[in-house]
Image (cartoon, rainbow, N blue to C red):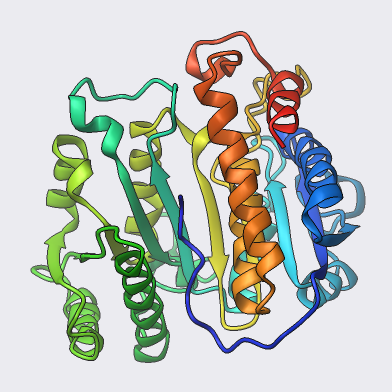
Length: 372
């Protein structure tokens, strides 16, 4: 069971009614969110959880139509929701004047302070794995990327010097790093409590860059406050190697934004691809849940999109809501949804296109609903 969103934040008792901002976005983002809405409707009928869904427009197509990727009103409603469930945003041919893609999902991370980018990586039953090693079926780790600074702090701020040089600056701050590491170490402790590996690996490039030496220094300071959690360091290049050679040895990894962006895609490849990789971006007050994949213009509108990552992201959302608001019904609903996904895949009755099968969005959705 993925445990990516179980940081022990200050909680307050709330009934099991929540407002969720739905942001389908572009391309297959719309298709997988529509599928997820159908699954959540079935889940609500028997779970004791009520989700009020507020559908909001944002993304590349919205930018093309209105000149704005995400309006101030949309942002306000998203920020005031109990959680945000997002599809995918962006389109290759639709860009800002500076050539960068439309990405309101990044704006949400920065504006809401969603510093902990949580990427659970778990081998799913019945699905093909990239590695033939018999232990590949044991892959089950969480990669946490800092999501508001690092090299991404240069987004929209890079310097172009004439036509001969370009510069982007990496930013590592003590404030964000301390919160990131505390989140990570607490999550690792939660895993250990449930009898699962909780060792934390800090991934950096401290042998070359002063900013990463600072990153590692802060990690060691915060780790010293959690003596029951085993920790280690690894350079990012060695980590990429071991993620292919022995990914089953990892439990929890934490790293800078850009490194996490790359490593999380590599990790998703180990378990069948982005269609099986959920994600959450979590801050002190807000959280966004979304599949790790993009808008997939090549299959958009064909009914071939794999909604599994979206279903698993929704399960993470429910568990986060349950933990944050002391609402056990929401936590239980998240567990049920994840179990239903596993059961559907394990049955062999459905196989997504991106796993070599012939089952599209509708068939996968029905298979999960049948098991709820």
